[in-house]
Every structure is written in C-alpha cells, then in structure tokens.
Length: 629
Image (cartoon, rainbow, N blue to C red; front, top):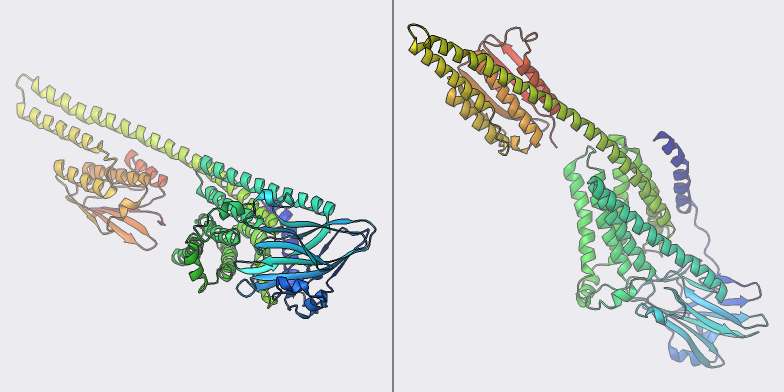
C-alpha cells in the first residue's frame, strides 16, 4: 500500500497543480475585437471561428438583401463573451437565437471543400450554415436535435455542415444557432473536409471507447457486488451507469429517443442536466457505504446526505413532468444554476468526507481516489467565479478520464479490503465453529457424566435397597424421586428455544427453573427489550451462559433467591446481572471447572465482558455486551 501511495502521490500533485494553475493566474487583458475574416491558403487545415466572427441577435432574413451586408453586420453586432474555446451568449430566454458572421477568402487556385461545425453540441439545439454572395443566399444544411441520423450531412452525431468555395473567391459565411433551454453557448470551427473527417473519427472512437469502458466497469462492479455480496460495488455500478447516461446525452446519442418522448419535458437539450442530477443522486448510496465504518455524527451525516439526494431527485423528477408544468416551474427555478450550486456542494461534501475518513480512521485511499476524480472538476466549477460573464456548468470531457482513474483507485482498494475482510471473517468464523464444537462436546460429556455418575448411581442405590432381605421401600422411593428430578433438570437444560427472542427465552428459562427447583428465580428487564436487537449468535451465547450459571447455582450455591436483571448503559451497551444469595464460589481463582470454562469461551466468542464477584454472602455474574451501533 505504501509503495502504491508513493507511486500515485506525484501524479496527483501534478494533476491538482495543473487544475489549480488557471484559477491562480492573473486575468489577461481582454482580446482585441474579432476580425471576422478567415483566409484559406494551401497550408490551411482547421481554425477556430470563436474569435473570427461577429455576433448579432437582431439579424433577420430580409437583412440579407442589404447591399452593404458586411458593414451592416459590423454595426449591429453585440458584445458577448468570445473566447478561443467557446462563445457564451447567455440564458436562452434572452438569447434564443444568434447569427454569426465571417468572411471566407479562398486564396488558392483550387476549389476548397470546407466543413463548419459546432464542436460541443451541449448548449446548442439548432444549427444552420448559409452563404451570401452577389445577392444570392444558399443554405448548405440545417441540423436540430430532432434530425434523424440519416439526415445529418456528415455521418457523425455532431452539428457539422460542409460547403464549397471556388478558387480565388470570397463568401459571406453565416451561422445560425438556436437554444430552447438553459444557457446558449457555441464552439465554432472551420476545417477542410479531410481534416474534419480525421479529427472526428478520432473523437467519435474515443467516445465509443469511453462508453465501452464505463459499461465494462459497471458490469464488473455488478458482478463483484453479486459475487461477494458487497453493496458498495453494486452502488458504484449504478453510479457509473448514470454517468454514462449523462455522457450519451451530452454527445447527442440519445436525441432520437428523447424526441419521441414529447409527452414529458425531457428532451435532448436538457437531458445532460437531467443526467447530472441523477448522477449526484446515485453517488450518495455509494458514499454512505464508504463512510459506514468511520466514526461520525450519524444524524448530521444522514441529514446532509439525504438533503443533497432529495434536492437532486426532486429536480430530476421535474423533467419527467409535462412540458407545460415544467416550463411553469422553470420560470421560478433556474435548473442549470441549481445544478451548478448542487454540484459544487456535492463535490465539496465528498472531499470533506474523504478528509474526515483520513483524519478519523486513517483511510488514505478515499482522499487519493476522490481527490483525483473530483478535485479537478471542483476547481473547474469554482473557476467560473473568476469570470463574471460565465455562470454555466463547466463541461470538459477529458476530465472524465481522470474521473475514471480516481474511481478505479477506490474500486481497487474496496476490492482489496473486501477480500481481506472476507478472509478475516472466514478465519474468525472457523474459530467460532471450533469453539462451539468444543463446547458442544463438553456439554455432551457433562450430560453423559451426570447420567452415569448421578442418575445411574442413585438408581443403583435404590435397586440395592429393594434387594435387601428387609427392603427399604421408602428410602428407595426417595432415591427414585431424586433420580427423576435430576433427569428433569437435565432435560430442561436441553431446551434451547432457538426461534424465540432472547427476552422470551430468558423468561421461559426462569419459569422452568422455578418449576423444579426450590430456589426462587426472578427476571427483570430494564432495557425495554434491547436484548432482542443483538445478533443471533450473541443472543444464543448469552442464553447459554445464563443457563450454565443457573445450573451452577442449583448444584453448588445453596441459594434461596436469584435475580436476573438487564440494564442499558452508556455507549449503547447492555448489562445482564445474575445475583444470588448463596455461599459463593470457594477458591474462585483456582476452582474453574468445565462449566466456568465454557462460560468464558462463549463470552469470548461474542466479545462479551464477563466479571464475577463472589463472596460468602452470594455471587454476582455481570455480562456486558460490546458497543452497539
């Protein structure tokens, strides 16, 4: 374990440092205004358009007929957040649509087939590419979330439209995007046809590999959970599937499915948010299992956990309501903002739990695994507060690789601990079985010895008195009655009442001993039946210890009264006190017969604390249970 920690620590520091650098570096000066010009030369392969377009939200189709089209667009553009990796417009209610303009100049002597694409597809619902030249407008393609895969201009789940520009020609390129939910954001790019194909084949295969990876990991978790009866692995499997659903939604793989579900509010545009809400909900059962053995305030832990789960589950269920009802709720609750706040709280709580496990239980794998998995994502979300224009959930697909690595670390340690715990449990169970078998053999030998030495000798004596020349009938009857009582005593001790709760078994035991013994037994339970909440093996061992103590009292103590009392103590422990008024145990430290040895063995099996206080005025047996959860 120490070698693994030394191996992983440098990589964790590097990853966390890379994630922290963007939030620590000073803000750069704002970039210069976009030039809205793209030149295509012989070396051109691809280029981001985010800093090379003018943006307008007031453009109308009739504006295409204006003679000074480029000048009009320059004068009517709006100031939005334009960065190299994205153009953020804002909430869809304010920016339901946007037009992006740039001038494409082909400086080569050959025609060029180019592709314009919106790379992210996460916060864009409709995408259209048009060109304008000499008063002629041409639409090269229109894609929406409802567009079937066969209707895509290129065979990928992406917003990509090809167009052609002639040699030494200039085109006015227009891109039209629409958004119907949440934030409106695009990531525009232009590339040659071959470059686009090669890049998107790689991206498409990487997505397929991620799907296969998450499916295999989830199946492995389910199989391990079933094989080892380990709920933690099963919960992790459900969580991995929820992450997979969220990814499939953000990639557009499930748009066709959601487009058929027009009777609810869930759609391709909001399914990513829905998936993250579900993912947060499904993670917490897994986290509860991880934290089960760690000392903490259970009430506070459960309140925080169930509050986070409840908020995310209710939010996810809202997407399953009719669209009209959801839209009414959406006017009062900003679900994307709620998701951002919920995700930050969720990640902060998980990292706090990992630190708590480290300091309270010295569990290192949680802080390593969760740190690798979630800290980059948390820093990425917190970094949005450095940018006043950005209030959207940050989505960065490469972080899922680190994410999967962190969960893999946790899974390896969980499996290792489960196997170690299983071996320890099997060894402990074997030891318990051997001890119980030894006790069983001892009890059988004791019963056989009592039948032979006591009952047998008594009956032989009774028979001898009957065979005298002058039979002593009364003395024989007395001895026979004594043998009958001894047999009744032995038979009562063989009654186990296996299916009854411990409270009822002790009451029944006291009643039986009162039937055939001249000693008075009294049972009083002041724990309100807490005995019945102990595990079955502990209940059985306590019962057998009390029975053995009763037997010793009847045989040796010469007591007139015996009180059995149950008390609840601090730390959720129970005390069973057996008090008699007999003559005590002579030479207790030296006089440990088979009965007392069996009592101590049963106490050791269930980790019971056994104290004996014996005086000539009586004996107290005190049985104390370990701390109960």
